[in-house]
Length: 387
View 1 (cartoon, helix red, strand yellow):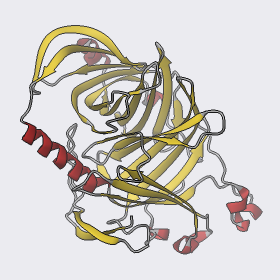
View 2 (spheres, helix red, strand yellow; view 1 turned 90 degrees about the vertical axis):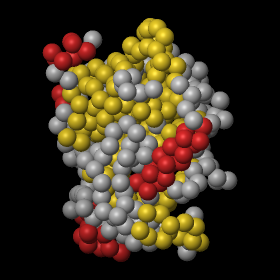
View 3 (cartoon, helix red, strand yellow; view 1 turned 180 degrees about the horizontal axis):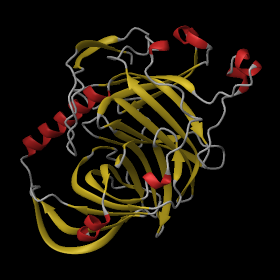
């Protein structure tokens, strides 16, 4: 359990996203020991970006998007500068994603209903009081190496306890994930300097169909010590992705990486959320716009680690079609259009302000694109001017 010293990571937790900047937090230097639903999107390159436009046309990059864009040719940057920028982006991501993330997690049906924990893990006192328990208390110690594009984290579920016995909670399960390295299990990973990431995890099949986990990790743009992870578990049915269930983790940053050795316990800043009120559809549907960061994939799987890079401004229209409303101002959806499939998750972190993550798959079931956008609602007058 003791980790070999591998690097010194500065946990100043500053966020300098290529898509949109976030406020900064105090500097903390520590030594780490490593043990290891219908949506239309319109994208417009920013005027100050280094693009050379040749002509305009309309294309459909995903089943959720009908995007009006211009054919663009990116000027070849200085290779040394580009390499340094990529290294800096990963280093910033490593600082912002690493640490002890504690909170609560719960499973939901495809209708968005919370799923009770197994009776065998619920304390007798709760059963006697006929109290239903839906949430696990969780830990997610995460370590990304700033000098190497390697990352590992554990999702630890703790047995439910009564009262402040949480300070002496017992581990129920631990799921360790590795990105890059000899133990890599991820098939695609897109990251942003802010600490947001999206990962595609092939998991053991059920005997008939392969299962994938589409993991979307979103950092609160106004509080970089708060994040959510929404995992869409999908069954691969030929070239179709069929949603099976949803997992949600709401987490707070409690300090530098300690490999899960210290638990927030009763000092935890959050509470169980699964049975609480779901997001209002009226707060989500409508016109949205905002800066968008994109990572593209060729479907071969040869290059599975990509940075989410600024792609100008996104414009979208969202309705209730296939929308799954979740607690904590969260939602998700999986849509099909023209043979393509798109998954979307979103977090309404303030009224009229959301951060979203999308995965677009081709008609062959290959990942084409991952995007993360910070969106704000658009008034009807402004929207009609934009189109």
